Length: 299
Image (cartoon, rainbow, N blue to C red; front, top):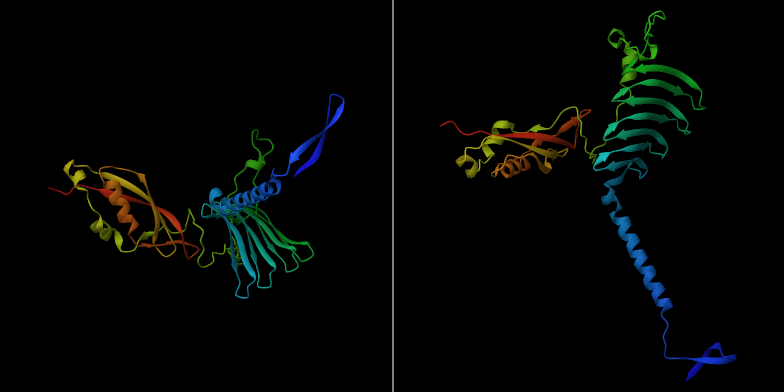
């Protein structure tokens, strides 16, 4: 059977154009395939986006299931605003991190959400104006910090001396004497490092060290025969990621020597146990560089 679905005008006459019924249309099928394909691509992007950009959002929770903290890891290092909550779910603190270090304006909050304290951290020290507020937002205390200490004096400035700008004067912080209360106040803020923190800290208070000492390390180090035959001496530097339990998770050769020495040094470091790095008294993940010396035995 032929259905006449179209009409065309030809030479002043209307002509009916037959359309065979055996012609199949796949518009709906093509649309379904396109939708499935786009959905698949979107899923791939969502799954791989964190690895592509080296960024992950980490969440930890209180025992009651409420959110305790949320922060961003970029290339395994804290970077961005970290937010901390109490067990009822109220925001307690907002702490900025830059490459694993606290840097920027830190804020603590009242239970009603109003800012309780606000101050700035620059290169690990309080700098600038510290302000404390009541729950209604009224300033109840204001202190001026310089390089980590409360500034109690202003720089001397002689208006008759040309070329001096009081804004560029250096403050004699060594001469400032702090009371016990002020020292306690300075120590009141300490970045919280939760147990099992996955962040990698490029700078720590104490660097990783060999657990069994340097002598045990060199007992296990293999001197390649090619290097011995060619009397090759020198140093290989290995960069290692040591986790908070003292185990080496990854290694890379920073300074090679050749003739098998690089591989020997890297394998020895990889299977070495360390005392992990310390930050604020807690073991953390950190990088360390190990200098491996190849010295020919005395003949």
